[in-house]
Image (tube, rainbow, N blue to C red; front, side, top):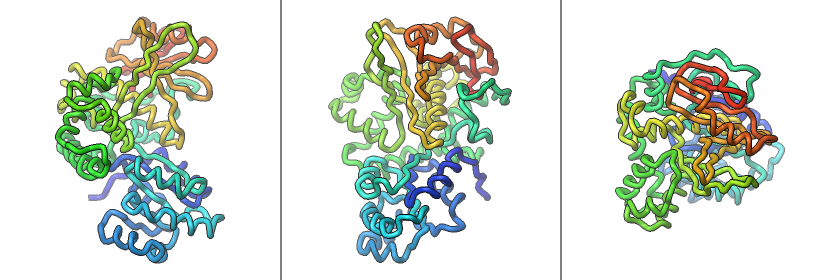
Length: 406
């Protein structure tokens, strides 16, 4: 069966980087499509070598110079975190031919281990890019579609029926599930979680008890899109707070979660300082929360968190797949006024609220109005993102926006 390739927003960024840098490092979670993307763009001129097989790792470890002699550039070295000792020798070769671009294309799935070595060995020589699971704009065939605040007017993109929208949330953004729609979503996510635990988490020293770590994942999913009290989470799990902090760092380093910090500025109101955590993939969240049915997901207690996760992931993926580090926060005062997301873009602040109702009304924009009043010079008109198909103004400060328009 032929694989359906879904064009990615990162393609032009990768092509440009390969023309400007001798080394490209493409990171991201397992199964996000890194290998497929590099092969799609560079297979005709690049040799491909997977560093995962033990005999290949042994060859690279025992004789790194000989290994690189056998695999002359341009070459794709896949999952290079299995052979980090190669990086100083790649630096040696790159320095000998500094003007030659696109020599080594490296992929890796473990940020903690890989980035330390890349920073040490390839600083100034490598473009470091990330590939996350597929975004909604990529899935709809519009990978370069601008964000709402970048468009002169809202488009008339086709909306999805509510049940289909929630089905896409349960499916998530991993390419295999979207290239093969008949795959069993629940079985795939269960397998991914197990593989992820066995292959990545075991190699990171912070995790000893895998069963307890699985319990931690489920407990974290239940707290998604909420203020994260690490002390409370540790108490509920019966582990030390430092253990929770270490496990969170593991999930961040392997791109399973995004930690959102509150937006701070010198305003009179005292603001909440506790972070929020979102899963990078909404399908992962649904699986860990035990959700298998779109109706149950849409009407259950996790519905708001799922919708927020989908919006957060879409914004982050859009920026990351441009090669840009997203500046995204939340805003919450001690009195409880909250805007779900604040996106900082070109010095401007874009407030975004997420609502479950498909019938937007002006009251839904009240927190956005409060935020704009506190930041009159920097805050732009905001958006109330909802699961329906209605796009309309909610007063001078905000526009109701269907999720599919995001």
